[in-house]
Length: 498
Image 1 (tube, rainbow, N blue to C red):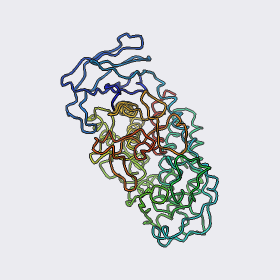
Image 2: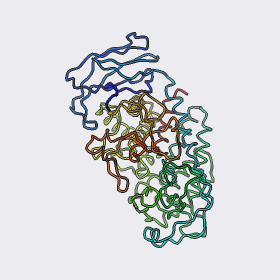
Image 3: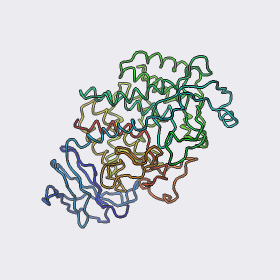
Image 4: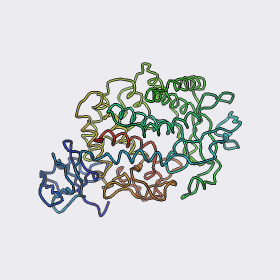
């Protein structure tokens, strides 16, 4: 991005004793010297750049060098200088991510649902509903209050909300294992879990035991617009097998982390209902009726995930996915909770990361997905869990280097977390906030078209990493979402000094 330093660094900073790399955008062909100065102008490091062999590098379309800053001591105001180029200032500190980890969790509190009418929501009826959900005859109203708004709109979705909850439950597990206070995270987990339980169809109704797929207005609410001023009519969408399997899986995870045996009965009911209705697929309506479809036509991985959470043997099809897990790609959550050896997928991620001059373990050839920043973080979660399982420092170093991309060591020089870094995202697309709070992660580069959600034509023809706009009109690149703030909370807590 024009006007930003050509030397791209982690604008939040670097941890002492870990990998410390920068990326220099330059047409230079041969290695060049660089120097690191502190705030007082004293030299604290030096080296020679390493030209990246692919010119241009394919994910960014840029010619770059990699700089190994190598062992900088704790301090503030460091800058890297190479030729006539200077980096943004950064610091080196052990507690680098402490505040950010708290802010990332705080976003969930800020996204708690405030729609008072959600205590009595009917199933969606009418010609469009009958066309999308043939045979469904909803009756009565349902209390589906609580839970988190999913993204920059006022929808709540079981398949998105469940995977975000799964992440925070794992964060609670991590904090407890480290002897740290997990009470705030547990409170948020309980709040979301209570909503998920309300989304389970009660006895006496069609599809009892299954989970409603989503709840939101029949049309998109205005932007801007506070939840109490939302003029739309909120309705429930037909239960889906995917939502039901996700409810079963996350209930089982919660039963262990929260030590709540009653949740096993919830999971058992959902599991049986999903087996009774194995092919209730959420249709892709391309966002025509006030919310995202969150469709998934292949439920093989969803069943594997629920099976793994039961503690039953599962077979994870090799090779493990390198494109990052998401609501419709849950094989990796199954792997992480199955007790299997995490070294093979983690080693493949390290290999992928080593082939990127920006440090991110993510580079899908078919294009970068909506929420690519969340997928990058989810790959970092795999590395973090592999480090936890094996103690192998290579995996932790992979997490440290991978985080650099999100905080400014990327093609745009963009720190994607609000309130952090010099060139941070400032204009997230969201209805909830007039002033964006710190610790919210932007979805990030997205070069894959999504029917019903058009990309900005200004992005046409750009390399994958450059498909991003820090504008509140860019839904496909600059939306908030609980699915990417959850792994942000996990990874920053994992890297936090406490």
